[in-house]
Image 1 (cartoon, rainbow, N blue to C red):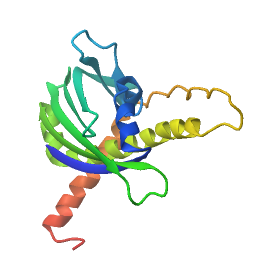
Image 2 (image 1 turned 135 degrees about the horizontal axis):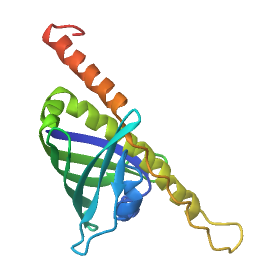
Image 3 (image 1 turned 120 degrees about the vertical axis):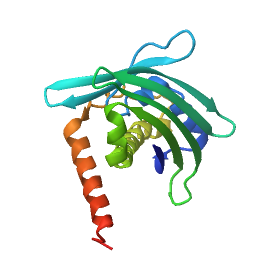
Image 4 (image 1 turned 90 degrees about the vertical axis):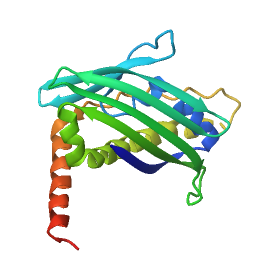
Length: 202
């Protein structure tokens, strides 16, 4: 499954990529993400939680990240699986940062390119509405990242007196992904595809 998208966050690109390098902080902006202590080899064990009403299913795996601060780019490689009809996923996400010329204040456009291999029950899911769900997750991440980075922009403003600024408050973890929301996104994507087949909405 191939996916491309863009979103904007507050701050200059050089500052944004250093914020991205704070992996635990960024994990709090990713819907459903759960991050454990970093391994000695530099990888990050963790997973993603999807809620089905009162029941939650966790996809466990690990990710490696790499940043090129000079070129304002980075990559994330991740693999995960869940004990649910052999559900498994392997994904590579690349991103590149550039100035947002449309913003009146310093802002950065983040271009994301993702390629994922999904197996088991997730293979059918990708064909039905995977791109729609990826858009939803990216939009949620962008919203949370923008709110998180705005804290830094406020802290960076000069104080009236020479007082050391307080650190930004700790980020609240993003809630688990709601299966209900995901299913509704998939249904809408499926109906849109059927509509295109029959020429509806053209």
